Amino acid sequence: MKKEIKSVISLENFVGMILAFLPLYLVKFVFWGMPLNFLEILIGSAFIWWLLEQRFNNPEWRIFFKNNKTLFVLMGFVLLGLVFSAFFSGNLKAGLGIIKGWFIFPLVIALISADIFREKKIKALKFFYGGATGVAFLAMLSYFFGQITYDGRLQGIFNSPNYLAMYLAPAVIIGMVLFKENRRRHALSLAIILLTIYLTHSFATWIAMGIVLLGFFWLNKKSEQNKKLFLGFLILAGLVILLQIKTDKFNDLLSLDVRSSLSSRIMIWESAGKMIADSPVWGIGPGNFQEKYLDYQKYFPPYLEWAVPHPHNLYLAFYLYSGILGLAAFLGLIIFWLKKVILQKKETIILITLGIISYFLLHGMLDTTYFKNDLAVIFWLAIFLPL
Image 1 (spheres, rainbow, N blue to C red):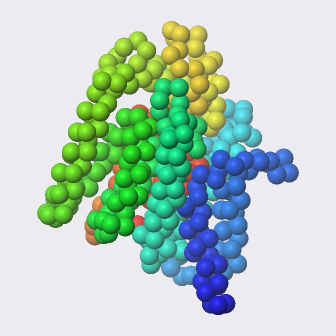
Image 2: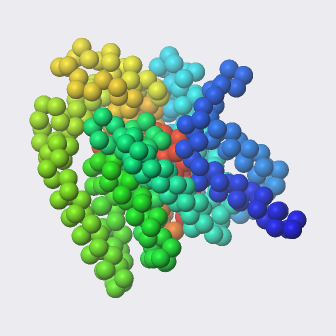
Image 3: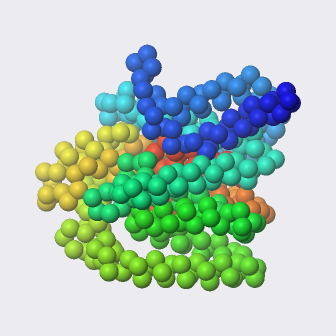
């Protein structure tokens, strides 16, 4: 009995629970004047537990750092760019808080996960997938109770339908692989996640996810099973388009109408571009986009969208929040990682993490796919697991 309890109460299961319950960052409070969220408390606890077990003494850590020294140097420059940008923006306290929540804690849990699940990397992703299935199920329940946005979109526990879609998209990539391994076990969970993403009406998510899945099928085109999955995916994509083709949001996607979603994004990008032109070296600092965006209204026609916490573009966000140093380091980090991973044997973990990072980069052209606590954890988890 004691052995069974000990096997349940383990660091591995605790870290797995954190990966399954990433949306706990939504539970926020202030501790001794410092803003925290429940996810950060859990990550901090896991870090202390990890230190107490002295897993950092494992000689494999030295090999890991030596083999990926360039990655860690570039990561350091990203953080340096964020600190400099926060300092020169005059809003250092808020900037440091954002660096803590969107970089430090996600990096810590991703590194711990890479260590804990070194021999069973897929298990770490299965924990996340299980949590994502739960989030999708809760979102579906809220849909049946009529809890949707004014324009008929599903957002579940998040503040935006796009946030829900971006959180679930990596789970689809994981789910497609699990589905290949065991169709009966994973068919229902994958269907729930896909239906939930469909109900968010986040076209950018569909497009990026579709491109990644097409790439996944192409890499495995010799498999007869993949040919069937590819055909099923094409049929599903066709149904999605047919069901949406007469909706206002779908027509907005294809037009540059004055009030379309694309027109709104173009206006946001133009405003972000002027911010970069005015602060080309250090950017505007993390967490300052909404305020700056409103200040820059005087340079443009009346905005189509006013509540804009991020510039709807991953690369513009890195430039604005960490300056040219942070953006260059981020791009260098991605290039280094891609070269390293692509040259490795195409094992399951490589295909999944390559798919997740590709999704972040593709969808990042139309949305800010990193700057949120849970997305940041998923990003760094995908970076470190295959290394």
